[in-house]
Length: 133
Image (cartoon, rainbow, N blue to C red; front, top):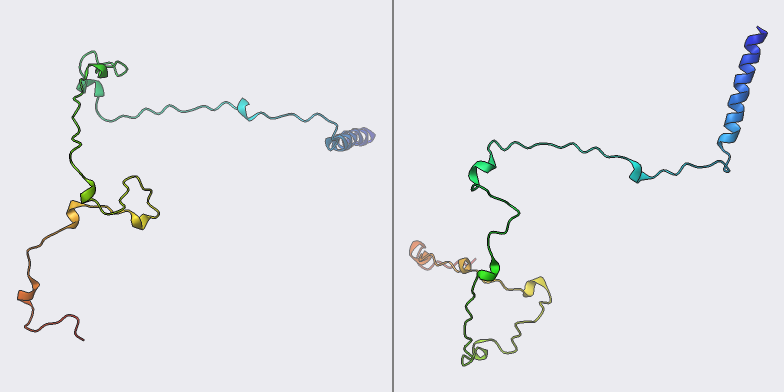
């Protein structure tokens, strides 16, 4: 019985000493570097149901430049200075003015002007006034 008591006392002593030194601020703190974690990325293969190589020309290289942009010749158009656009613009018009708010931006869409070629007066009773209560 004494052996069990002595073993238990020694084990409790070790636990007590370990607990005392656990809160000691002088012990070294292991610095954890988050960059030391290795991330294993799963490579997923996507099957589209067809082989894209069947639709490409033979010997196709996606990294090869097939079009030489220096070989393209551009035509320069002459600017006519005799046309006076200022007389067709509103007074004080500035094409480079910064709009002050969203409401000052005017978009012109050709679909905004719809002509139905429908005269509603033909289908209303005589003397009809929509504003009359």
